Image 1 (cartoon, helix red, strand yellow):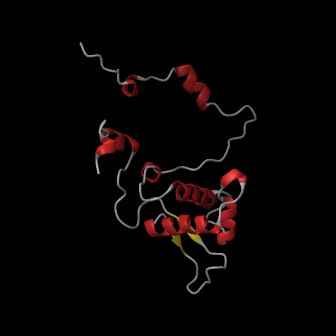
Image 2 (cartoon, one colour; image 1 turned 135 degrees about the horizontal axis):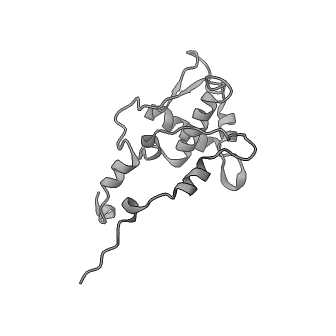
Image 3 (spheres, helix red, strand yellow; image 1 turned 90 degrees about the vertical axis):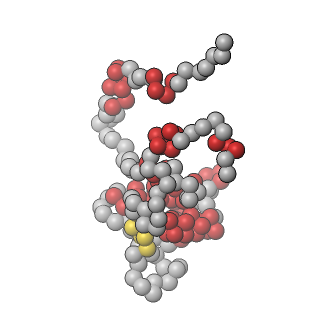
Length: 154
């Protein structure tokens, strides 16, 4: 007789007392800032983890303390991105992440035409893909396509 593993994803339930405690505000009454992230951005295969983190940072700044991202230089972007051992990320890695987001259409450079690359530039974080499809629109949709042989597919 063959035994199969139960599918715990579909049977898991959250206890009401745990959920209530999770939803309560902190004892200080202050709520930490947070950024909403569309599902498709988290699972987008065309951007790397550094680019995803940069997009989250830029999106956070877009709505924190007023509308719009303040003008930033590449050096400031590198300072905002955590690197190895708590140091800022390198300029090459910061430029690669920035270019990836610009090509994918998750960031839009809205600086005045002719602004030098070294000058502070204005960006706009976008929620919808501007350049092509988004792949999977959600994590559940991607998980529904899972098979045990996924590593062998090309």
